Image (tube, rainbow, N blue to C red; front, side, top):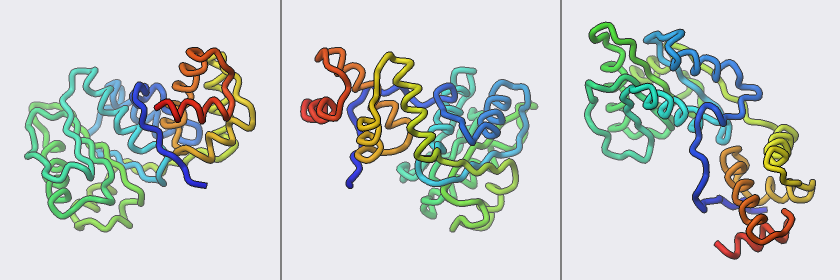
Length: 228
């Protein structure tokens, strides 16, 4: 059955607080400690895993937390076709979708990587990166691939079916929304299965149900989609 992407706005932005860390507790703890200043070090962090495992969510969380702490952040993903030159004011460099980088993006990523980890005035600066493969398997230029695998490497694990159901039910209970097994099965089969999309969908269902004074059912979901 075809899965639908949900793009109807108003979603809470991904951050470290709303990351569902079940099975990935170690990487979340590592990121929080680094960003809190308790364990700052210039060793890079690379995360890898399948689509939907939370890589981009965590990188957005790193970026947001760093900016809230007054740090300057440089961000590069595969959609940025003409990356800018390295900014000497950056404290953190974030590299997402490394496995998709073009030759020019790889060159920029390597330049950013080397520059941000060059000590300046005693500042501890960091690199946080992610891709769908472990560093050794990335089809990238050798110098970039070796640097991505030099530091902390974490494999992220996507939640299984039962865990997704449990997370959805807990989130719905927290909102005071009852989700039947039929509704949860419909959500998991018809929409993107990554948690940020599912939480976004739940939020819109809650709002739509309140506005229409109806319970959350499969017909309600279909009606909401027709109103978009």
